[in-house]
Length: 352
Image (cartoon, rainbow, N blue to C red; front, top):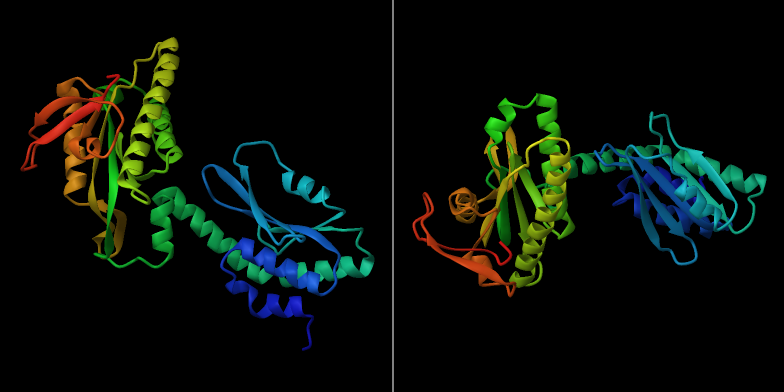
């Protein structure tokens, strides 16, 4: 069967596209080569994510550039991609395939499309159904993995890091945070209210971690473990972690003020920072794995956080972090940590 080049590509090769952005750019360039009067295009996929409802890629024919736009769950319906295309020219839009949340493929023309051109674009949309179904499935899997594993860990798993015992040693700042008096609070609080309190706590802390380039590895009851991998200098990772702690404390101060206005107790917490080498990879049972960080540095940061209550501090920082940062810190002396052979030099933020 002698097919036009774009349709042949959709039938034979498009399913192997590395991502929706490259799919859109490649299809657009092939349609341009067939003398279709395109100014730009848009591809929208629904994704199962707690925050993001849909992802849209926008392609400009003049430059070949692709940018991404996000639609958020719970928000009002958005037609931003259609408005963007309309700014380029007349728009032709098609839903693709038979899935409940169908992909949407749209094009803007440098002029209005004549009936033959519109028919060719709709035929391309029909041929795009199979490769787009594969891309949508991969995008959905990526969104789920990122929601449950975090961005960096999800990327490793997608790349095939699935064997138990495999991993890599990385240098990172570790952050361990934990709520105080959680057991007593949970016994005196209805479950739904307790879950809402935990979610509010995690929002403030995890939000600050992600804002400064860190990643939450796991939630542990009422606590969490996060890492700030060294991608530039150790000092940059340590400064980012310290800024995240300051931001988290500010967020919790606002939350506690709101809780006080509602007659609720504050959510007291402790946070510890340490810098060192961790093994980042797969551990677990033969049929149930966890992609996480392990090693002496992880043990130390969790033990260090346990000193927050006896020392009366909400933030404790190891000497390893203090050596890498120029931020003003207050020394609290050397302290024994349970299960750790050598005493640990302990610091806190200068403002307390």
